[in-house]
Image (cartoon, rainbow, N blue to C red):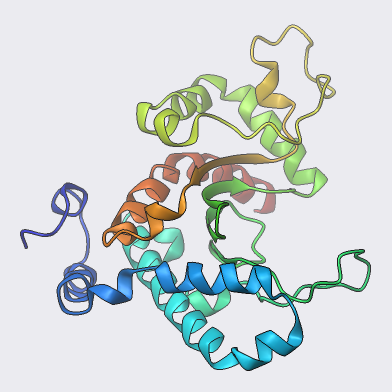
Length: 254
């Protein structure tokens, strides 16, 4: 048990998940390395065409299966703290590698990343969840709700307004600030949305069109032997944030 991190020793993880994790670390450490996946994606970026992809289809299939194994491990580890993920399977969380090029000027046929959205209901869920994005030079961890439908967005803003102190406490948690640095403001409005007062002291909290937090990671983060448990640790920092958002989702949807 000496190799289990402080995170695992001090949490209420199910023995089966811990044993599975230790087995992978000790008996098949290579499985934890994302290096082969990153290398394949770099090559795909250079050779983004059907001829190259078809010639390397077996390699892609093997790597996608490996990635699915990683995501199942993450679901188990995160799910020990967040019961929203209980019963979730990685197969419902992974995105296709094939791009929809019908209306795009970019006709390259393949995405150059592997990604998974871990939330109740899988990758198409409107609920807050945990996002893992593996792309050479652009890896990231993310959580929250992206592009909510108008009724949900309105409810989220109202919930933040009504429970501002609670929401700020989540955002100002030291671990949250250290890893995620606050909300992603890329798509934020420039003016205060109606019906909220213009003198509200935290206007940036209500101008959001998404409620997201993300952390960019360099490739080396995922090429280390302990990336899996570090990823679980850092994604779990988002748990209170996701809980706040999902409480509002549940209130709205009865």
